[in-house]
Image 1 (cartoon, rainbow, N blue to C red):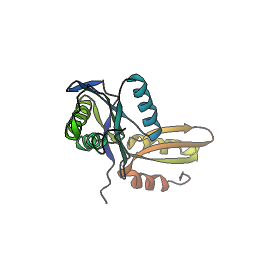
Image 2 (image 1 turned 180 degrees about the horizontal axis):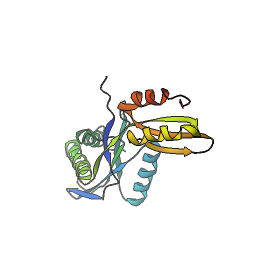
Image 3 (image 1 turned 30 degrees about the vertical axis):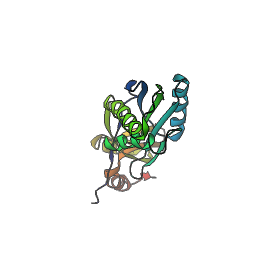
Image 4 (image 1 turned 120 degrees about the horizontal axis):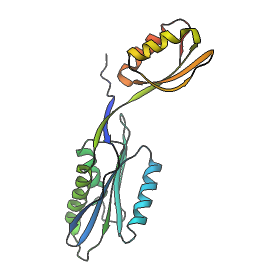
Length: 201
């Protein structure tokens, strides 16, 4: 059987705010679990409101497991001096579905590109160190339809295989949506398909 990657590391919840200082510049680090780009925009807008005196709110995110997409944003800082060092920490911690943002309040002394890279990297690293990282399982979802007479057989398999019921409608014609660990999906589907009168979609 092919080896399917069906777990990933992400954050349990948003991190607490951390502060990294360099030559009076203040770098506030935050890490958030995210599922969509729309969430990213809402969070960044909220941070810009919270840190209204920040000259830059730089960030990076990665979303997805098998073919993750990512973005790194320098928000006006010199090219690749902020977003990419932040993204480098997301890679270093091996997390996905994660946004790390660093608002910076200028302290009057220019840090140079090297100083900026180090400072954004440190703030991102501290934010991720301050986060609870968890492992999640990638699931496939199946819709199972069957007559009420088959309910005992279906529920026994669900219990035996420890499957998650996401939705259920129990009437004369029953309908279940179940979550199955991706690496076990084909095997589980075959079991249900093999039962007379049970349909899997």
